[in-house]
Length: 323
Image (tube, rainbow, N blue to C red; front, side, top):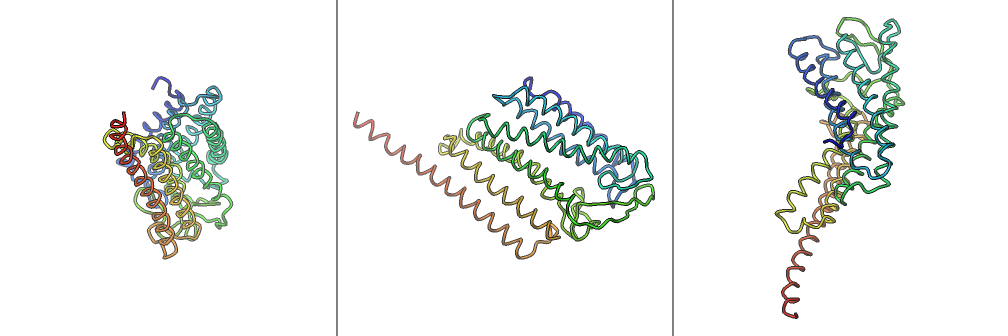
């Protein structure tokens, strides 16, 4: 870990510490905001940014070229993420809305909201720069490189989703915060039912579309692909057909294709005002198509790899005889 990006590691440590504070808040503070504990939102953001900051801290240590630029961009990302989550936590502790808060009577909110608005843009720009740096160079073997590139692409898409929230036509509304104050909001996550009832913990709407779903899946795709790469590498010690890293790279590519399809479908589903847990026939058909294509790509890769191993095993004795 000595070569990992230090500011991002510090950021990750702060986020995971915040999670402990939020868990304590859930236990001792009974205030609610939009139907959930005031501490749920900072808990979720602490988890998401902690996991992602840790991933970037490791990833930037893999850069071959542009390490100095990568260090500075990573530091900007860490600082912006820390400020972003800090503002969310402060507003939660105050019992009021953080994102989309249009209250003009609260000087603290007026001072903090710009950090949320522009912080997202800074984080996205830093993410794009890191993504381009990784794209133009090979940071590891074929399988890991493919996982990193596809994962960063998915994460970038996940970060772009909030921009769609800003241009989607959702009528302004007024909600009640944990202090009983009426708070005007200029935007929201939901489509069809901006204040829809949410699932436990995630609070994703069960009555309408919710863009937090593709935001979550996109942002954490890189962790899914990295875990898959590690699992395939571990299995390669047991299965001969997995020992060729090109085979593992193709399997990671098939998984990335399927995961990208998943993100596309849940984004389309949310845009149509449809809850994740209430898919219609068109959405189910789209999910099935993604699953089928992914299964075919995976099966084709596995069959070809096994055939190659059998052929190699069959030709080896003949070579020995000819010698």
